[in-house]
Length: 213
Image 1 (spheres, helix red, strand yellow):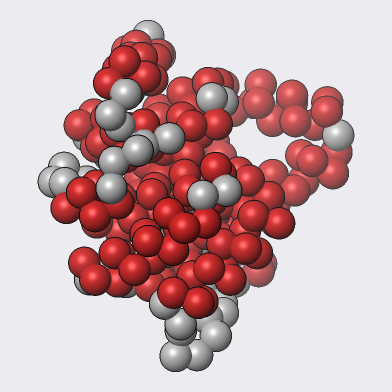
Image 2 (cartoon, rainbow, N blue to C red):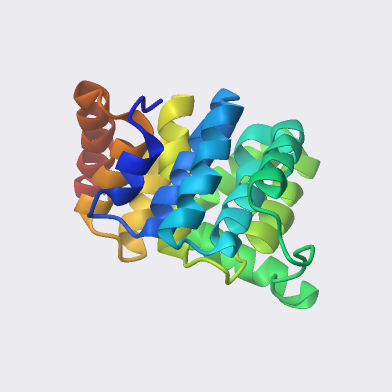
């Protein structure tokens, strides 16, 4: 996890402020660093980041670090940056979610999509359906962030979780959706700086696998 001040990270060029703030928040939540999450909310507000971006990031985060941490994360956000009205909605119509989720899943995993789909189904049918219908259809397909922005935020938290296959898959997804390699690097930097060795190692895994695809 990055030990640099949040303010320093948010002021760094090379990555959209919304993505940088979401990455800072998600990494803090995964580590249970609630004071750092509180600081992220305060600094993001000060820098002009829309609150909705953090809301979307925390909703997405439930797919990575689960409900208990997500509930505490929203409690922290509500304390540090109260909403004028409780946020709700913002997803695709329910009848469009599954198809959108499957399309997003296929785009991220590309030629490996059928193999990953089959692997999930072999683990448990409920897990498979949850991933397609809820994770991809209800959450990751929300239009509040672009697919590239969501993938960049995902690789930040996956890098500190040391989930290498998922990191590589979502890194390739970010590039597929139009993110620049420099943005991928900056997402990793947000999560891991100043550990340049860890940043470079994670970046090389993504880029090397992309070139070999």
